[in-house]
Length: 217
Length: 217
Image 1 (cartoon, rainbow over the protein chains, first blue to last red):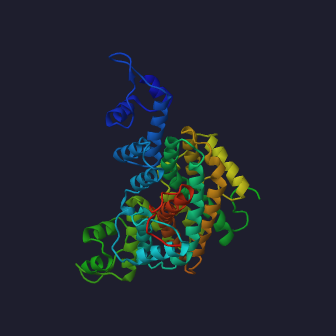
Image 2 (image 1 turned 180 degrees about the vertical axis):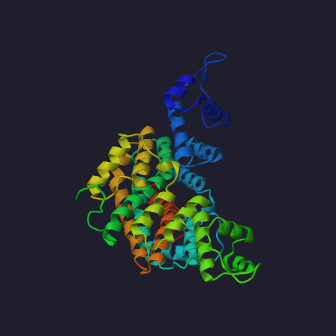
Image 3 (image 1 turned 135 degrees about the horizontal axis):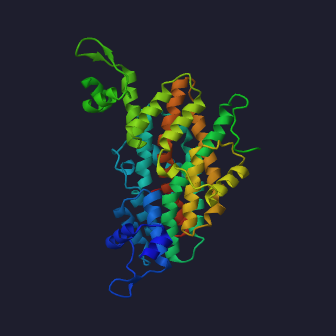
């Protein structure tokens, strides 16, 4: 176990905890006090840490996601669903009042994009909640920009699915779906922050000489 | 104060707390036990709740962001920066080891897009951390899709800045920057979940009859 700790960078108490909670499968017992762990244990530990540290999932939620990955008979769309729902298990994606203006805006957007989206996709509720909040703050003009945001979302989703299609093994595909869903939100938010800075210099030009030294054109 | 509670939907203990912490400016005192609050107080309370409930900011962070909004002499790019940094005050955007492979990938991406991005933009560290985590998980192929994610981020940033340019008043612009930064991540993540479902039916066709009833083409 101390070698597993070294190879994965995860502490022994954490490894014991993940074993006890069933997130990490047991090693092959070689004596009363010794067990053998393989590279698949190191990989699984890295996945657990990515889900919890970067994705911000609770241990219980990570467990649910790993169970879906470990079920090779489940269709990939189901694994996708479990990952989406688990990661979306926050107040943002909770139910919104029926017939809210935001819900109507989301339905209109889905109609105009032609997206096939099931009624219980958590994104529907998340987007409706955000749009209702914009309206509460008197910022209704956001609606004009929804087609642009939807176009960007479709670009992102196509890249997401292309990354999944790199794999042929179902377990690898499932892992890519989960990792991509968790890490992707963080990647997209990070890229958005950089793009915002770049575009803001074009829209609101800074005084001469105040540009950053990040890049030369 | 009970009228303010009714108009804003925020409880009296919360209102008292925000007054004490300086997030909400004091009302005009009309007697020893009475103060008058105007519509600007209702608006401010809605903004506070959006930052804390949807944006997930701590009270201390919300305070820092509101201070930037309240300083009309600050350039808009500075308000943008404060909002970005405050919202990015999580472990995702913490320092990454110098010379990490993810940092090199981010530098390459900035070079190839021609983006102007200052060295301390938190998105640089967030993206580098995510890319390092992908590599740890053996998922290096994500690099191929970075240009697509960057293109989507620039689309999003142009819509973000267009929403800011709707306003001419600096305080309104600053509020749009803050609200858009906080709510935008949630909106984009929600739209991504819907687009993923739509694209997944195209890439991995479901058995006939298993499509959802969300939209007809």
